[in-house]
Amino acid sequence: MRITIIGSGNVATHLGAAFKNAGHHIVQVYSRDIQNASILAYHIRAEAINELAEINPDTDLFIISVKDDAIGGLAKELGKYGKLIAHTSGATSLDELSQFTTKAGVFYPLQTFSKTKEVNFNTVPLCIEGTDEQTTRLLEELALSISQNVYRVDSEKRKILHLAAVFACNFPNYLYYAAGSILDKHGLDFNMLRPLILETAEKMMDHLPQNVQTGPAVRNDEKTMAGHMKLLGNSADLQQVYALLSQLIIKMDK
Amino acid sequence: MRITIIGSGNVATHLGAAFKNAGHHIVQVYSRDIQNASILAYHIRAEAINELAEINPDTDLFIISVKDDAIGGLAKELGKYGKLIAHTSGATSLDELSQFTTKAGVFYPLQTFSKTKEVNFNTVPLCIEGTDEQTTRLLEELALSISQNVYRVDSEKRKILHLAAVFACNFPNYLYYAAGSILDKHGLDFNMLRPLILETAEKMMDHLPQNVQTGPAVRNDEKTMAGHMKLLGNSADLQQVYALLSQLIIKMDK
Image 1 (tube, each protein chain N blue to C red):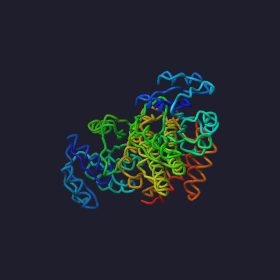
Image 2 (cartoon, helix red, strand yellow; image 1 turned 60 degrees about the vertical axis):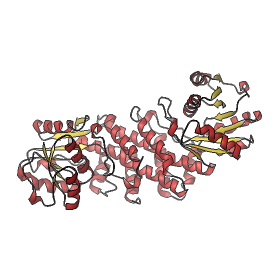
Image 3 (cartoon, rainbow over the protein chains, first blue to last red; image 1 turned 180 degrees about the horizontal axis):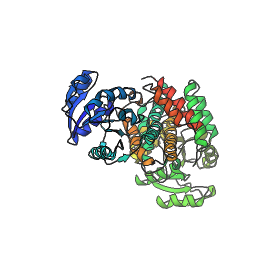
Image 4 (cartoon, each protein chain N blue to C red; image 1 turned 90 degrees about the horizontal axis):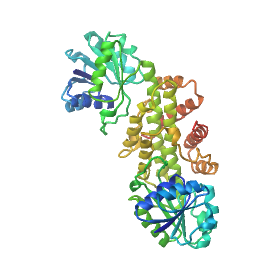
C-alpha cells in the first residue's frame, strides 16, 4: 500500500517503521515541525512536509497519528482527496473522521511506544474499525501485514480498551516512579527493583492478577501496612496511594 | 551447606529449590501442615516434619520463611541449637532473631514468587544482613551460589526496599486486576492487554519511569480524562484510583 503518515510522534514513528519493514511504500510524512517530519521521513524513505498544501494525493491511505484534539481538523483538510483516512487513537470515535469522508477507519495499536525503545510489532494488538466492510477488511489486511494480533473493535469498546490500558500501563509506570523515588530518598538504586518489575509483568503472561496478588494488603498484614504508612510519613501523596490501593486489594475478589 | 527450611510457602519453595539446584543439602523442611512440608520436601529430597521436637540439629543453617508474626516464636525455639538462623522477610528486623541467638542473619529475596511459576533465581536480588562479619560473609557466599545480584542491606534499608516493592509489584498487580475487571464488564478479553503489560515493564529494564510516562494524565489531556471518569461511573473505587493517580502523574517531576 501507499501510505501517508500524518504526525511524527511515538505512534507515528513506530507504525511508520513497521509499515516500511512490511514492504509498504510511505509516500510522505507530515508534521507541523519540519525537523520532526524529516527525522521520521529519513528513516522510512519518505518525503517530509510541514504544509498541508504540499500533500501528494497519490496515496491509498492517510494515517493520522497526532494528539486527539488535532485529528478532526486534519481530517477536514484531508477529506477533499477522497482517500481512505484512518486515525490511531484509542479515545477518539470513528465519527471524528467519517463526518469528513465516506471511507474512514481506525488503526489503534494497544501498546505503549517510546521513541528510544524498539517494539516488536508482531505481537502488538491492533484494533481495527471501518465505515464499511470493504474499508474494515482493507485495514485488517494492512494490520495483518505487521502483526498477528488483529481485532475488530468498535468505537465504544475501543474507549474501554483505552481506559483499561491506562490502568495496565500508565498507572503502573507511575507506581514504578513512586517506588524509585522512595529508593532515591534512601540512597538505594532503582536497579534493585528491575527484576521484580519484570517478573510481576511476566507473571501476567500466563496468570490472572487475582490469582497471584502478593504483599501485605492481600494477607491483611496490618502491622506491616502500618509500618509502611509510617515510613511514607514525609509524603502525603504516597500515603494516599498506599492507603487507597491497600484497601482495594483487601476487598478484591480472589 | 546443610540447610533446614522452616516454612513451605512461596518463598520457602523457590528458595529450597534454588539451594537444592546449587548443590546444597536440605536436611529438613518444617511446616505446621505436614502435607505442605511433604510436598516441598519431596521435591528437594529432604525430610518433612511438622513438630519442632523433630528438628535435626545436625545442620548449618535454619532459614525461616514464614509469616512475619511467626518468625520470633520459631527463632525462640530454634535458638537453643546454637546454629545460624536467618529469615527471609523484608519487613522484619534482624533483632527479631538476634535476641535468641548470637549468629543470626537475613536472606531477603527482592522478588515475587508464586508456586505455579518458576523463577530464574540467577537474577533475583538477594539482600543479606548478619549479626557479624563472619555470618554476613557466610550468607553472602550462600547467596552468590544461587544469584548474581547479592547486596548487603541493613534492616532499615531493607524495610525501604520492601515498601518500594509494594509500589513496584503488589500495586501494579492490583491495577492489572482493575484493568481486567473493566474489560470483563464489556466482554473484552484480558489477553488483549498482555503485550502492553509486558512492554510497560520491559521498558523499565533500560529506562527510568519518569522518562517514559505516557497516557492522558502526562499530556494533561483533560477531555480524555473526563471521558474515562465517566466510563468508570459505576465504580466509585476505580474513579478514586483514576483521579488520584492522574493527579499525581500531572504533577510528577519529568
